[in-house]
Length: 185
Image (tube, rainbow, N blue to C red; front, side, top):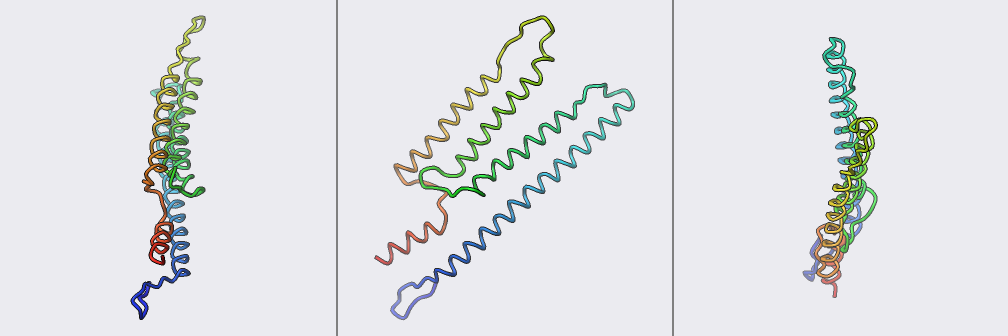
C-alpha cells in the first residue's frame, strides 16, 4: 500500500495476491505438521499400551481380553476426527451464509454417530446373554441428540449470516476487496 501524490491510497494487487498465496501455503504446511504430529503421538501411545498389555499378559495378569484394541480404536477415531476437522479448511471456501466451522461440527457429529453405532454393534453380542432378547437401542439417544445439535448448529449461523451478514469466516481478501471497492466509488 502506497500513498500517491494526490493523497489517494494505491494498492499493489499483485503483492496482495502473492501474500495471500504465501499465507495459504504456510497454512497448509501448519495443517500437515499438526496432523503428522498428532498421528506420531497416537502411534507412540499405542505402542506403549500394547507393550503394557504384552508384559501383563505374559505374567497371566492381563487375561485374554485384548483391551488395547479399544485404545487403538479410539486412536483411529481421533485421527479421523482430526482429518474431518481439517477437511473443510483444505477443500472448500467459506461463504457469508454458511461458514466452514459449521461443516467441521457436522462432520464430527456424523463421526460420533458412526462410532457409537459401531461400538453398539461390536459390544451388543457380548453384553446380551445367549437366549435372551436384549434389544435396547441406546445409540438412538445419541443420534437423536446429535441430530438436534446439528440442526441448531447448521441453521442458526447460516440464517444469521444470510440475514445480517454476520460471519467470521470471510477471508481477508474478500474484506479488502470490499473496502477498496467502496473507496474507489
